[in-house]
Length: 152
Length: 378
Image (cartoon, rainbow over all chains, first blue to last red; front, side):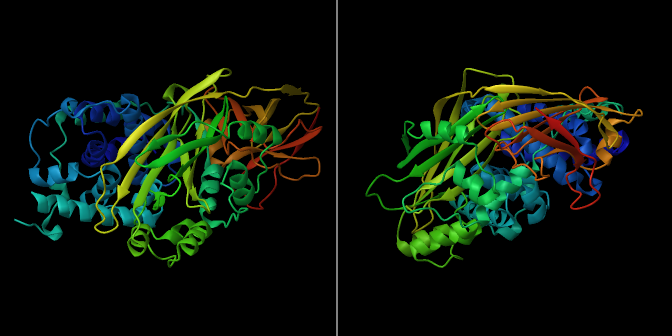
């Protein structure tokens, strides 16, 4: 993988990377750090990507690990008050609230599937989970999201 | 107003990427240099395979026995845990328990040395309490856990294709989804923590966690935590009680080497363009950690080396039998000092063998052309 290809791919997938990072971290400062670190780590580990067609799944996996590291460093001590209010609201604020209410283990596969269009197989690779588990989590996520939206 | 799932565009739940985030990402991407060397290249596939295999093996245990590491490696992986490690694990059998969300968690079989920390953590309901304890994937069919899952289904008297939540509904029992995994300070870790769960005959669950360590801590105690998580689910309506989370402090003494050996190389050895410089061994309760250093020949670049495949030092006994893979399940290839390459692997032995045979070869050859071998004697 040469640098041009790498920069083009990062540029093309920037929005997706941000949404995935936000799904886990819910804090723009942390997202910024995680995105920066992900780009640097990915370049260092580029020889591990055997087939460039899998760039998206591969970089999502690196990002998720980086986000978990960030979370661990924070030691889960961030209170609700400390989570920053986004500068501008998302296009569908009630959907955003409903999505926020889901536990991360459900929110992340749902986001990868319905926001990013990844297949169950790709999500399974990115999350290191069996496909059956991915399917189950997405099913539960949809059920819970529906409940959250109905409760509004 | 109720909204149908089909009307939703999930992307609308996210605002556009803030400029500061995009700038940070793109600045980092543009800052990389073509000639930048990889920091460290590690292969950890074998342990991952072992953790997958665990779900497909019967691993039938004597009645009343709880799954432990020895069962895990023996039945799922064919690796014998060295006796010294087994003894250390047996000594840690009775750790203090903690109750969270109605589930009693007990760590047992703890082991740590400078390269690895592992724990088995059992989760069970109090005596007389009725319910089903499962991992957090309770919408999975029970058979997703292979033979272990089928044994659970048989014990519960449900079809193996039933999901955990449906089994709880059918039996009208509360369902406890749990997780119990090691959490080690990142300053000591190398790579990701890996974990998986198995179900015991008595209805309890055992979580296995393995965390590779970076070697910075060589002796004393490793202070870490067990991350605990419980959600109680009402089988009637699948309502989850709020998740309960806690952390349990653990201090695990690090096993240190009991014997070391520096092998005398009596002949030159070159394979895949790499010349063997030295071989050093450290016997620990987990087995023999082997450090083999190589130097690239003929100006070979690190990229050219990796293009050759997954070329690793393989260890054999004097009869050419492959040594059992060590319980850390990890090989390390460190190419930071290229053209020098440092490698580390663990073989599962109780003592330093009189003779060792080394071959630097492609792990993925699958019966292809064998690499040359070198015999090393004590």
